[in-house]
Picture 1: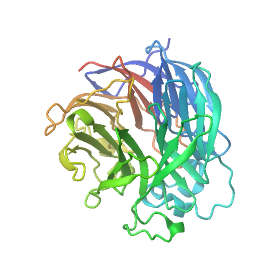
Picture 2 (picture 1 turned 180 degrees about the vertical axis):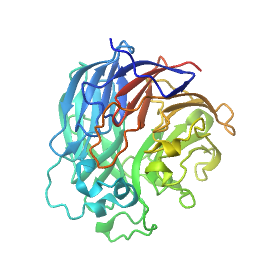
Picture 3 (picture 1 turned 135 degrees about the horizontal axis):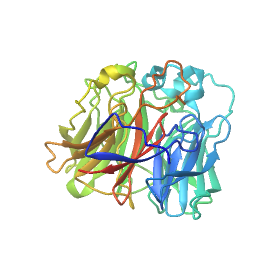
Picture 4 (picture 1 turned 120 degrees about the vertical axis):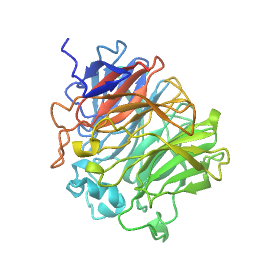
Length: 413
């Protein structure tokens, strides 16, 4: 067994395992389910399966390729089903060689001149009753760029963000999985101005991108994050007709990039994370917010999480700021007081929000820089970019990196 890479910094966390994911160290979203990690790739255009039953010895056991021109950056696992997004591989498109184009302009506008359809758009569903051998059982085809992210925790309904023809960017769709072999779109919702084919005209500022990153569901409410379009709470009692409860947007004056809204229903709190999307904090400081949602029609921000300050991460290069939260999925580690986040070039962070007015950082681990670059976009610095974080029921932390593989971390706080 080779030595583990030495973290750049750690406090109350310890690196216990690492994997290059079978030579494909580019990772985005991961799910740990029944002792196996399912990892969507950013560059490698598919997803990998890593056996983590011994978290100190993660072993890659499978790789499932995406269709040509397609990426599988996000996925969800529950019971015997694995749901995987299919979308145009945008980072392989020269139009997006400068990442600023992706984050500051509607994707629909940028790709409006695309003539070919050399990619697959929709939702792939796999049977994972044999965890190391996903078997595709159905595909929901969509017209457009495809799906960005999914929320699925079992049962009849899945929820996706999708860029379909006629819209400026990704909108909210509900997917009926009453028969997982025959998935169907049931309902949809978007911010006013996004439905160009319906005659709507965007009214948001130049250089802003209004697009659903994804929604997390609690009960009959969908908590949606719309990048520069802020936060929505949707009533989804009728899954075919989502209805707006409230909409909040703090960009401007803040920089936007709203990425994840994690409800903590037992405390009437909502953790809302704004993603840092440009190098050296060019897009301004991004924050993790805590909202009081006792009155769903009037969400109120009551605190922000403290940013890492033990080093000059702005000067370090690449993105410094929040990206993902551990999302309290059923079967994983679930807490309404201990929150885990990735902070890109500042690694993985843990926060205690027992006092909701004073979040405290309780642990951190900054992995080593990647050994090699998988990101093929020109000029990307060889700096770690901790991407996703998943904490299993035993409290073991798993985190991906765009280039640096899978880190397995023990929390000591």
